Length: 500
Image (cartoon, rainbow, N blue to C red):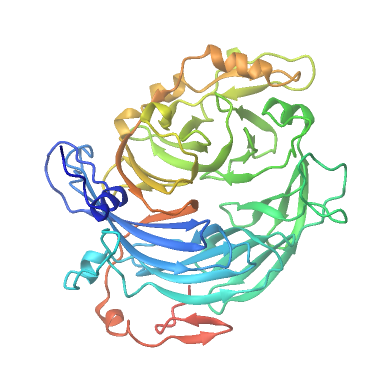
């Protein structure tokens, strides 16, 4: 009879798992900083060091080693959203913003220098759970912003000098990161009551309101916003701070993506592509891709039917000279669906009885899901480029606390594969039945990528951010790293006085 493992050893094995691929040439390791927001009000940071990455073949000798770097009791309620300021090769730190239901935006300074350059001589810290801890002394709390009167729903750094925040008080605030002064506040109108949806929890004298999500155009002059209780999206002029247009969602369009009679019909997320030539709006069980003329280009309906949690445009190098914008969508059943909206098969587009014909975009690749033994919902994910390589790393966070790192090799995604599995069907204005039938007749998308490692964080994930730590330590800055910070308008400003 075999002796059972001690409880500490079992817990340690659950908290950290290292996946080994075949041995190959060892290259300089890369370190990824992963930051997750949780339902338990905790802001959790950990690093993943991937060693054995080869510049020509990234599938050889891959070892992933996780270590906890920080843990902040950030908010008085669940953390809803995170944002990181743009990263440059010369930057030694980034600003992290977190928002929750407590109407507060917390700010942190996170180091971009790999911990191996800072803490090689530091003694290991003890841990009751058995997981490795590498506390970075340069990760610090800056302060908080309290200019909203509602729960924070979305945060974004369009540049290093501006922070945009949207809340349930129907406002989008623009703050300057140098002194954290609110420069402007964009006020969205409160929606009118047109009937109470099923399951509505708003008070009898109120109506669901608030800006749920927004996306800034790459030109920094336009912004799209989505509101709670509204079956439309708004276009804003960021130069003047005024509304430019309102685009209503067609009833037939909503029915084709699963927004039926008892659904809210409101957009959940909106994203611009890399060049700003198209944007996508995600609903509860489907998504619509619009062109720059605000006309629908194609529909996205995950099959089997499931909820959509996150959506990002990913820059993919499909060939030596071809760069594609791939729309990645995470679902309730643990999949990340990859779509290409560029390649369209116009021969399969039919004319419905009423309304224009809108093609149905089929995914050309699937990452994770039941085929890869992943069943939990993917609440959020990030894509990272490997230095000196065309492959991509996907960092996913599930609501069960599992942090997974996936690798997609460039050879798995060829232009021929994407063009053959592009837009292959069309929808009819009579509902979403034809969309399901047309999509079911097409071949199933190919399983791409492979799992490198899984880390059990022990907290339920609500949002996630990640970046490659490629900062360089400045000796002069390191000398002043322990200097006290000064407070400006309720927020600590670093001792170097950098204009972020």
